[in-house]
Length: 197
Image (cartoon, rainbow, N blue to C red; front, side, top):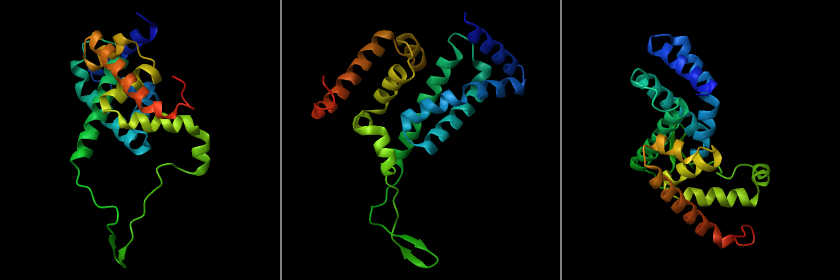
């Protein structure tokens, strides 16, 4: 058992016995990592913050039932992924407005203003053409495939850790991750000059 794992288990045990400072320490220890993972999934700072906040509320509520059968981080990634998927389901049910719909203000109707999702020209240059194409292609994948690619490639979780986090057999994780990679490769094949396959 690693030092980090045993330290986590000690903090969890203290938190399960009502020690709020232990829970706060767990949150402080993992909040940046949780936010980075959530941001990679959402690509939106506000949504990432919402996902992390919801995940830590769920951690707080479920902590008394945590048995320690998996690492705390694996459990946290599962909760973060579920919060992300729940957010997407809620958004899909949300009523949408036409792009040309105006906004009613005290001064009358005003044209709706939209933020450019590409950011500033400086941001676009910084990310580069390749990063933009990968990001666009990732958004076209189903959310569960996005999550698996992020867990494996960005968070560098092992198949075993992803299996625990998503409560799936390792064979299923490998096949779904492979399908996600194939789908991503097909989406990027149009840009042969940028991505030599």
